[in-house]
Length: 162
Image (tube, rainbow, N blue to C red; front, side, top):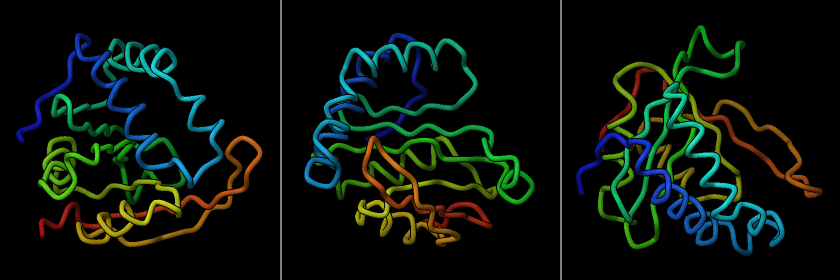
């Protein structure tokens, strides 16, 4: 499974993977209405807009997963971690295949970066720690009407390849 840069023609595949990954990952962990609200129509519009803007790097393994990275969005973090992993989604059929690491490597280099992940997503947390991420902060937030915890992970020296 070799990632490739996503193009505007990939918006439908990205949207389909995004929706299915949310269903596979967050069903039972998040309120059903929050999972359902992120439907293909919404995700397609989101991906069409982001790909047209071209402000981020997106790598795709068609039918399996994608990663997205770009400049740090939080000014307070930008000096230490100038890059941010914005998304990494691999369908269950791609778990354990190396797809996640390949996608992550395709969008981020050896420099420092950060990522935010839901605390309830233990699989992602373990993966981030395995690749050299360290937990920097817990952040209480609200998703819809439900309080949840976001975790800020940081990689001070870029990716650690297991």
